[in-house]
Image (cartoon, rainbow, N blue to C red; front, side, top):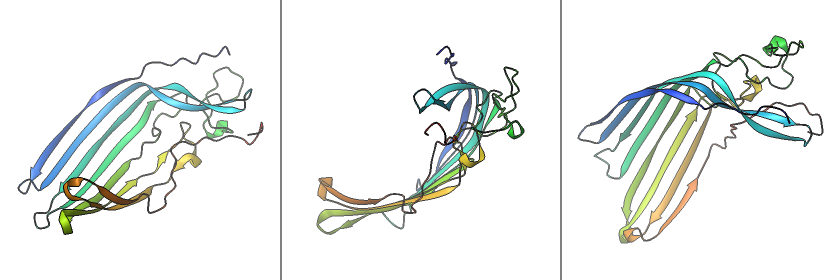
Length: 230
C-alpha cells in the first residue's frame, strides 16, 4: 500500500542484416545474420516478498538501457547420395548486457561490500545495486543445436522415420539480481525419436525420448532467508 508499482514502456531500436544462400545444386542451405539492438527502459522481472501474506510475487521494473548484439548461423544439408536424410545445425553468439541499471534489486543478505551500495534514502543501508556491464537475465553467450532426420520406405508402402536433436546452452544468469549462485551452468540436452507412418500418412506411431541426458535446468532463481515461516 502506498508504493508506486508503475513502470515505463519498453523501447527498442536496432536492426538485422543477413544472407540466405543455397549451394551444391540446392542440397546445402546456409543462412547467416547479424543483429544489434538498443533497449531503453528494458522491463525486468524482480521477485518481492510480501510478509503480510507470506508469499513471493513478481514485480516489473525498468532497467535504464541495455545493448544486445550477435550473430546467427544455420546450415541444412540433404545428401544426394542418401535419399531421405536431412542434416541440420545452428549456432548463435549473443552479447547482451545492461548499459545502465543503477537501481537493480539487491539479493537477500547482499552487503555494501558486495555491491549493494546505492543508498537512496540516506539511512546507511544499501537499497539497490548498479548492474551496468552485467549480462541480461537468461541470455547465454553461446547456444547451438544439431541433429538429423531420416525417412525410409519399408514394407506395404509404410515409412520408417527416426532422428535426433542435440542442443547446447552456455551458462546464464537466472536472477535479475545476478547473484552468483543463481547462474545456470552450461548444459547439453539430447532427444531422439523413431516412428512408423502408414500408407498415405493415414496413421502414425512414434516413440519420443526427450532430454535423454537427464539434465535439470532452471530459468528463475531467487535468494531468500529461511525466516518468517518461509
